[in-house]
Length: 124
Image 1 (cartoon, one colour):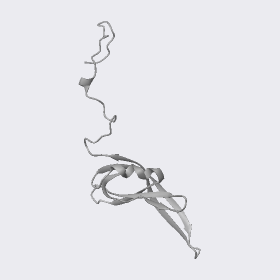
Image 2 (cartoon, one colour; image 1 turned 90 degrees about the vertical axis):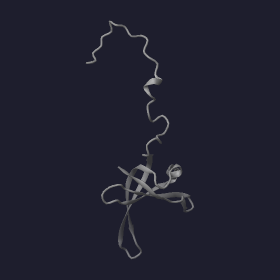
Image 3 (tube, one colour; image 1 turned 135 degrees about the vertical axis):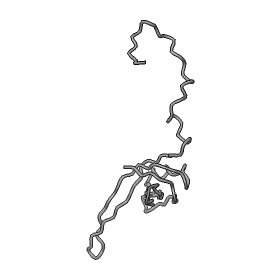
Image 4 (cartoon, helix red, strand yellow; image 1 turned 135 degrees about the horizontal axis):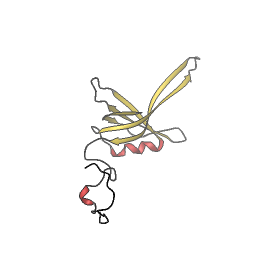
């Protein structure tokens, strides 16, 4: 699944427990009739993916929905959902990553080995 929108907030990386579990949150505001503020968490090594992004940038985030069950001390069962990010892509025009867009046609060498007798099935 994916969510698209503009970055509203990027949190600092937080570390928890003795095993060093890391988490970082980003809030994305969707651009639709009724905009939604969606909090997505990136965990462990994925927290570094947010280093090159700033508030206001339009992004597309690959997400997974996570759910868990917890029984409180009174014996009541509670359920929690989270949205976990695993990829983030800049949607701003002109800022594509190198290698993502093909080079202009004038950077290619013209073909030299064409022969008139070669079969050509192109309709034009």
